Image 1 (cartoon, one colour):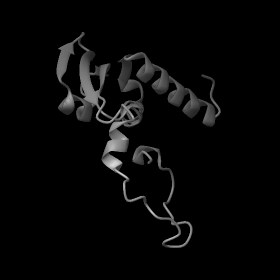
Image 2 (image 1 turned 135 degrees about the horizontal axis):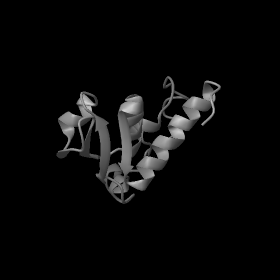
Image 3 (image 1 turned 90 degrees about the vertical axis):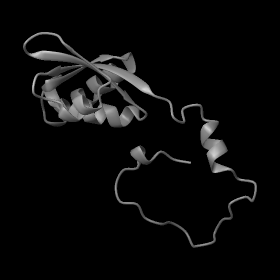
Image 4 (image 1 turned 90 degrees about the horizontal axis):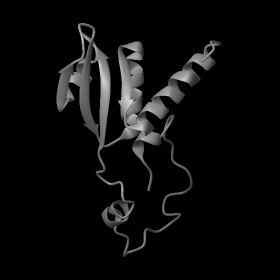
Length: 121
């Protein structure tokens, strides 16, 4: 079992066809459900600059005006990693407020980006 969002690079086959057999009693759906996170939803609170974050705005379950420059959005996603990437893609136009694991992962990814380009975090 693997998560597609974690696959990096080109996919290539390895080994010979028929080199292994899937057990007859294997139930992939039951195995995935047993992981406990199948279908788990992350509810996130984001601060988004006015005029930015259109994909986030379209899927928001709640939008609240903070001031002339910022709105607060609530979004729900089943893939935290994809949400981290989406938030980071908007750069300084989107701030992650909650949950803490989103804030931490967004910060870590942006710090890594700055470091990769020779800047200080």
